[in-house]
Image (cartoon, rainbow, N blue to C red; front, side):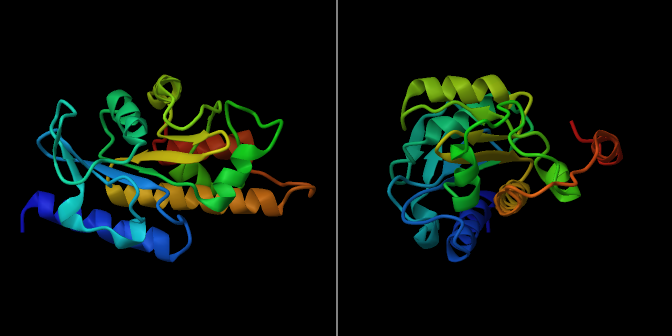
Length: 213
């Protein structure tokens, strides 16, 4: 089995797992991976992540030219915006997951860091989560806004939309977006309650222990 075949199969498995657990619905959400030759595989437009056909994934060369497979997701520009600024990114996952999207709709968020440090694993998997201002779907200015944050953040939250997360592998991107969703669920459950968040010293200790940026 070739590397590209394994990656195709992995994307389909991750997509089905996300769909089966209710982290994406309908044809929302998209996944991409960077190939060893510098190209990419990406999920197609208007296809459920729960029913992906590995052979029909969109295949791009290193210049971003569509080589084969179905037409890519209409949000491909979000993926390319992350890859262009993060040379370590080997995969990107974008979801419209319910709790993270709900947080993105709240007023009076800190746009530099949307959620408090509720758990150690949120800091380890996600870190700081900036809010990207709202743009209509497909607006090229959304790509510029994501690109402006991507060099400093591997995860961003799109206002009234959902999270975009890059990882050093598809597994890491998946785990990070899942941790983000769980932290968002906790954040919403704890609204109107007094919080005991991690202290700045505790957060700094985690960043030092695990070499987090």
